[in-house]
Image (cartoon, rainbow, N blue to C red):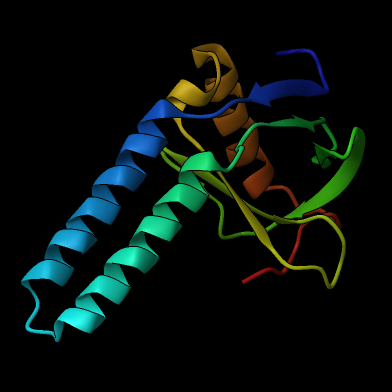
Length: 145
């Protein structure tokens, strides 16, 4: 068993940026091929470009930790905060999406964790902990949809 609490540093993912660029480019290609007036095509291309720049420049780095009691915390604004994980977290070998809320009533956030965002052993530990926690009843667990 690994020491608890475990702490993982999640960095920016080059693979995620490439997927975002490919998705935006395919949408742009579809927009150009669509039978729309040129004004709408140009407007759509400008909006897609703005979206790509927004997501490209966004810093996805984070520090998260979990313990044997199932408590999940994330480091925001230089201090640890308890986060409530949703049941809707996606845990795949190629991608993990953490859906969480820091405070009740606050907006939900998504943190996309790709395998190249952190060391391989930390990625495996995070996924194992999330799966273990999925079957553990806990008051810290959110009813986030």
